[in-house]
Length: 90
Image (cartoon, rainbow, N blue to C red; front, side, top):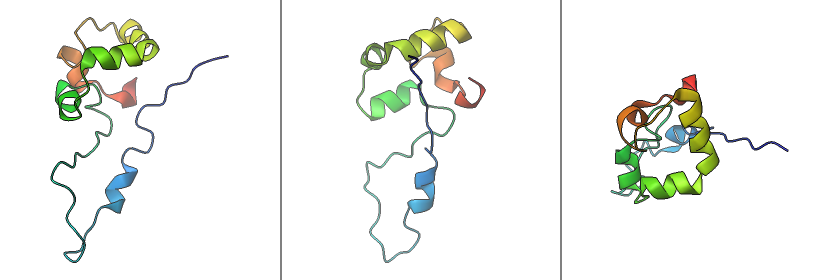
């Protein structure tokens, strides 16, 4: 059996669902637009959702081991090359 991880599938779909009329309520002030192809691994995103990078990496150990091995990334999660990693080229 294989494990498959899908990053960001459909992440941009919600963009078409945002209110465009002034008669609709404004989105919450703590609303964060999800990243599309870059930004999934940035420190800024983890801080904004209060998810410590070391916890993320522990929760999804296999994913990060794979990405680190394939892309040869030694930076701490959320820093260095992680900040602008483009999922479209992974």
